[in-house]
Image 1 (spheres, rainbow, N blue to C red):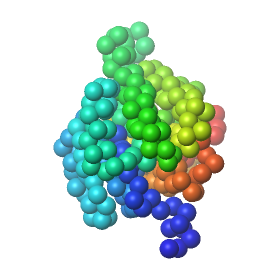
Image 2: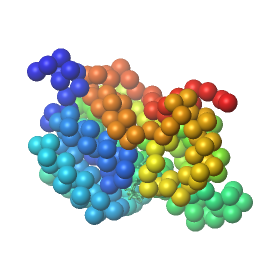
Image 3: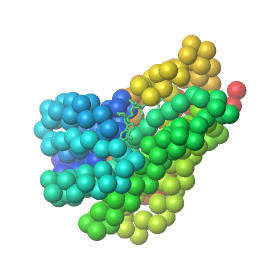
Image 4: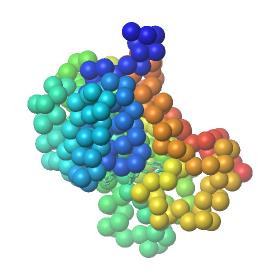
Length: 259
Ligand SMILES: NC(=O)c1ccc[n+]([C@@H]2O[C@H](COP(=O)([O-])OP(=O)(O)OC[C@H]3O[C@@H](n4cnc5c(N)ncnc54)[C@H](O)[C@@H]3O)[C@@H](O)[C@H]2O)c1
């Protein structure tokens, strides 16, 4: 085994990728599979989850897809049971379900507020509780990677509830890193900058794009493939063994500067 393989290989690990039917988490799932992990894709959109799971079999790993509403405790509990039966253990979790809306603050309905908070934040609390408990019982540690955003603070204009939910993701990441260090479960977050994807397609107007680029030292969008390095690094027991409670920004420098 080469030095890099030894440091980064995810051979024989089981990764659960929630929201893996989407653009960013789909690419992250592919990175994990290429590094040797078996991958279970959980998503509300079963068709996309299946497509991704099927695609990843070319890396000679075991994969499957399960339909879940990630904000439903029952759905996640049923999925966890199925995964343990099929794979025996869970070692890596990527929590990435996400929805967004650019409703002006005074027009945000309670219903919309709750929906975004449920999909973006409650889902991660539930996933950590259900899969984290499983990791604690297994007794061999694990890596949880929550997908935050550069909107987590200071907040991003026009997306109030989304920004609020992502601030909560950072806080939960830090909280659990302390509580679960004794179980050798590392809990970190990746905060992507701006990557064109499904959930933000409607929000990225020409004016908005100009403003984002002007504020991003690298003056461009990210390519989803640029999230793979941070994902494998944080997933690897060896490469990031002393990293927990961190929010890793992959944003072309967006959060490094004001104007
Ligand atoms: N694209 C960006 O620029 C960007 C930037 C920062 C953070 N993020 C975050 O990255 C993550 C992935 O987003 P993306 O940009 O790839 O968008 P995407 O829309 O392509 O992916 C989101 C996925 O979440 C799934 N999903 C939505 N509601 C769900 C639910 N209730 N249960 C289970 N799955 C559900 C969708 O079906 C979809 O597959 C999100 O958490 C998002 O907030 C994205």
